[in-house]
Every structure is written in structure tokens, then in C-alpha cells.
Amino acid sequence: MPDYLRPLLYLLVLFFTHHRCSGGTFFHRLPLEQRLMELANWRRSRIEFRRRFVDFYGSLGVFGLYPDHLRALPPFKYQ
Image (cartoon, rainbow, N blue to C red; front, side):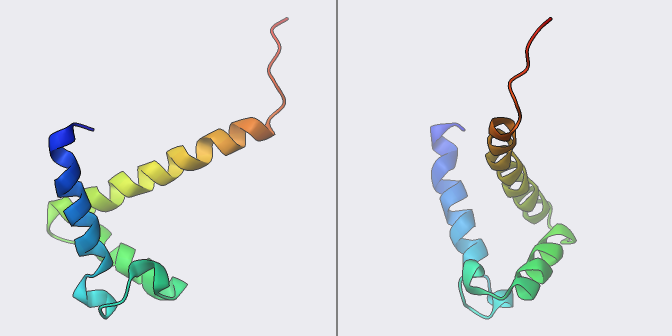
């Protein structure tokens, strides 16, 4: 990620965690049902940056899990 985008992304993360729809509490402190509802609201938003933000963080989650799955697989051997 370019250096000039880091502060903007940081502000966007802060906005997401303190968004008024979540009742002013941190996103990670919400019950699971409310977190899923909040994510669904952002995915269905008419504002495109909200949808892209959730997609971006979803892709980071997938990339974060991917190496763990590779470590669990036996090594591939060419024959």
C-alpha cells in the first residue's frame, strides 16, 4: 500500500469502529449477531467506499488464513 494512503485507511478504520450504528461501542466488542448485521449493512450500502472497505478487509482475512491451511497440508512431492 502506498504510504500516502495509510493515514486515510487508519481514519477509515477508526470511523468503522466508532460508527453510530454500532451504538458507539467498538466493533470487536459487539455480540456476533450485531457484528454480522453491521457488516451486512456496510456491504449493502449505497456508498461505494463502504462496500469496498468491507471487501478489502474480507480479503485480508482470507489471506491471513491461507498460510495456516498450507502449513496443515503435507508437502507436495514431484514424481
